Length: 143
Image (tube, rainbow, N blue to C red; front, side, top):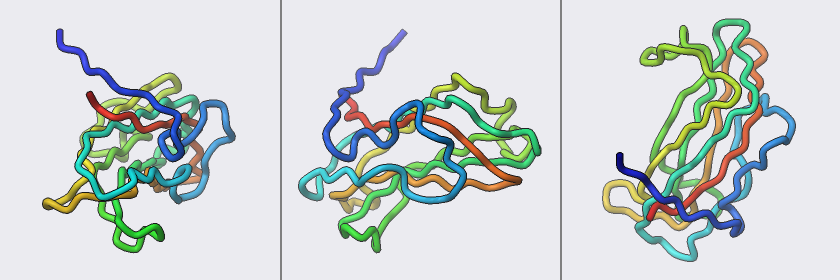
């Protein structure tokens, strides 16, 4: 079995959301931007630990996106990776509902079409009837 090593660092922008915070019910960026100090190519992972996920209406989805930009205001943001969790009936490729205790790892490179990005973010779009998700998330450099 192969294993993957993630370098954990508590530098500003890498810890996107601590476990145990209140549920997220609205769309938006999670935590502060990770400033790499320059537009560089690096391999990263976003690790999302779900503590609670409302799926009772049968139509809730939660779309996480790793984004990269070179403008601090995110005006040139590009999606680097995307993951959808929630009620399995609303996600075309999913076969089971998201449950408390699930952990998801999104892997990405901090570039798109040979353009490296300085600022890396995690964006969440919530949809459905009264969506609510409680989670912790952080970025890690992939070794």
